[in-house]
Each structure stands twice: as structure tokens, then as C-alpha cells.
Length: 523
Image (cartoon, rainbow, N blue to C red; front, side, top):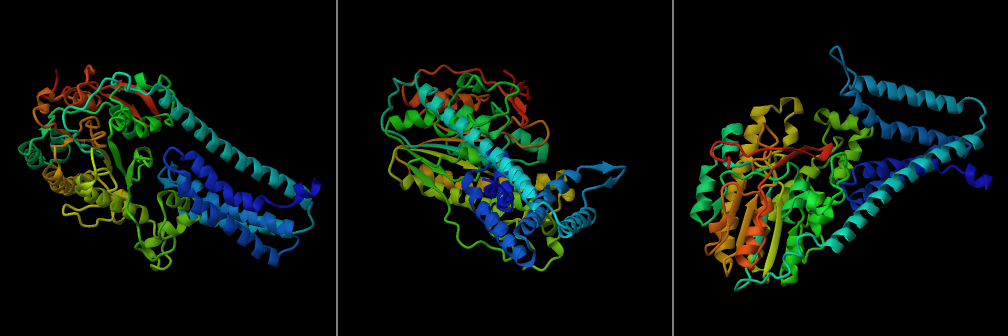
């Protein structure tokens, strides 16, 4: 037993811990598959480092201790740097590489010197470092396991309660089954909000929609201010407190929202009536319905970029920036392209996903029906990667310090312009290629992240053959599918009060009621 305790496994564990810990802290936004490559690379890197140091330094316990010191300093650098960037003492910002990097180098030299000087009780030191590293890894694994247990518990609860389906047990399709499209344009504000915030006139797109049979709710508001809350509500056509009584102020656990989105009432009701669910990869953890009957995603080939760290996903980029790699990341503008880390690949992947979804939507009518098509288009939400004509825009070319309100207004407006032109093409094709006429809900999950218009959303409906007669200017997403079921499936869902609740990310279920009091919108 003593030999087991004294064998130095801590370098390998300290190579794995940063990945597991970062995944545990970001599990609500990242999937384990995104971290797998990082975990393998870090483990192999730690093993290779240990092998090299062991060739130079003996005994192996001393080499292992030096390896662990190197790994701790390497993986902690970015965390300390990011923390110190927010520390300003009379105009003196501590978070500068010119200050922190020499300190880290001094710590490394001092630590190695102490290890090389004199004889030490390496057995006890190894046992201590093993214990610390094992404890750290176990804590991270327990956090990940706890999340998975909460997720599985939430999924079982959703399966047992089947929110919204009880009232729909008597639903029948009215005539020939129509394809149903639910297209979410993330952070797309309604017309008056765009005009006030960005001096952007969206009347041309609104006119096109109305001329093609759409009803545009001029006073549309979202029910919630955050994507996952908004989608969980709209897809189950109910307010969150009626879906899960644990979603209360002070509860920051969002894990119970994802099953409400993935196994929503609308999906269940339609699949029970023979509908095929079609979904797309969005890059947004909460809205990717991977077990849909048809799940579409881009086949990403060789990525652009030749620098080190090219082809990273979002999690890997985050991990890279928490290490000493942050030095190279911030110095990329002055480094040769072969040495500069390529951290733009998640942004390019985001652009590819949006383009793929837009292009695929135009081809969806050819799939066998009837279909329920759910598409979360993460645009015009940041990052701003489209010019007005769809050209590539690299948001990283504009330093954060220069991203003022004028930059935001121009960039957001360009994305809206491009998205409008794409939607005219897509919707025109869907209407032309669909028989019978489809049902289309074109809606935002929330408004722009500027000013006081977070709740003011774009909200348009194509309800054919008189279905638009029941629509009204202040309709909110919670009533969208209630009206649809009542009109086309013989449903008897009562309409709910159209209410909007704002909350901040740190306390998502503590709401502030937002009245719909824009001119001409108050009931």
C-alpha cells in the first residue's frame, strides 16, 4: 500500500484536472464530447513532460514534483491573469502580461531550484501531492456526476408529467397535415426597437412578409429575457412555474430547462400524430435536439488558419485562454502566422452553422412530411460575422476597447440586413414548394442586448386559410402554439395572459414584470 501511495501519479492527474474542472464549471454550456480531445492532449502532454524531465532529473519523485509545478503554473496563469485584469488601483491595472509573466517565471525558477537543492523526503511529498491531485480530480468528477444526475432526473420528470400533452389528448389534424416551421432568429428586435436603438428601418422586410401572407405582431414581446428560459416556455406553451415548481428565485440550476426544450410538449404532440421532427445543429447547447428524427449539421472539413491551436472548438478556446497560452493569444497580432494561435475557428464554425441552417431550410420541403421543423438561427446575435451582403466579417479585428455603440449598431444592422435577404429567399421557397400550405412561426427568443428593449421581439406568423384571424398585435410566444393547435388541430387551449418577465443570468428565476407599454401597444 505504501508503494502505491508513494508512486507519483500526480503529474498525470494535474494534467487532467484543469480540463475536468473547466468542464464542470461550464457543463450547462458545453458537452463532454467537446472536452474529450483536450483531456487526451493534456494527459499526453503531462506524460511527455514527465518523461522528458525524468531523463534529466533523478529520482523520479523529484522529476514528478517539478512536472506538477510546471503544470500548475501553466494551467493557472490565464485564470490569475483574467482575474487581475479587473483589478485597477488608481489607474494601475495589475492584469498585464509584462507584470505577471515575470512573476510566474520567477516562481518556476524558484520552485525548481528548491527541488534541486538538498535531499528531501520524496515519499511523503509524493503521497501529499497524490492526495491533493486525487482530491481535486474527484471533486471535479463529482460535480460532473451531480449535473448528469440532475439532468436525468429532470428528463424522467418530463417523461412522467408530459407538460401540455394532457390538454391535447383530443387533438385531431384538420384536413391534410401541414408542415410546421418554428424558426428562431436569436436576439432579433421588433421594428420600433430597431429604429429607436440603431436607427434601423426594418419596414422593407415587414412589408415583404405582409405582402406574402404573414401576420407581423407589431407589439410582440418575449415572455422571458434569456434563450433557454424563452424556448422552454414557448415550446411547451406555458409559463415556467407551471412546468417545474423548482424554478424559483435563488435557484441557479438550469439543468431542468434543457429536457423541457429537447422533449417539449409541441414535439411530443406532433410526433404522436405522425410528424417527423427536423432539427439543426445551432452551436447552442440548449437548443440542439440531437435525437430528432432528422438532425442536420454541417460537415466541417479542413478549417482555415495555419497557426498553432487551429481548429479549436469553443471549449478548447476557453481552456487555451485560461493557460499560459493567453500570452500568445494576446500577442498574436505581432507574432508570425505560424506561431500565432488561431482562436477564430469557433467563430468560423458559428458562421458555417448559420449558413448551413439557412441553406438547408430552403431544401427541407423536399423531405417526406408532415414535418415539425425547429431551427434556432443564432443571428443577429453576436458574434457579428456577416456583412450586409453576407461577406465574412471577423469581429476579432476590432479590439474590445473600440467596440462602442456605433460599432454595435452598424454590425447588428448588417446582420439583420443579411438575415432579412436570406429569409425572403427561404420563406419564398418554402411557400412555393409546400403543399398544403405550411404553418410558419418566425420569432425571436429575446430582443437586442442594448437599451431597454431586451423583451421586444420580432414575431411573425404564416397561418394559412384564415388562421391569422385569431392573431393580435401583443401576442407573446407562450400563446403561439396554443392558437395553432386551436385553429388547425381542433384544440381547446385557453389563451394565457401575455406577460413578460425579465431576469439576470446570475438569478434566472427571479423575475421583474415588464409591461408592454410602448405607444400603441398597451392593452
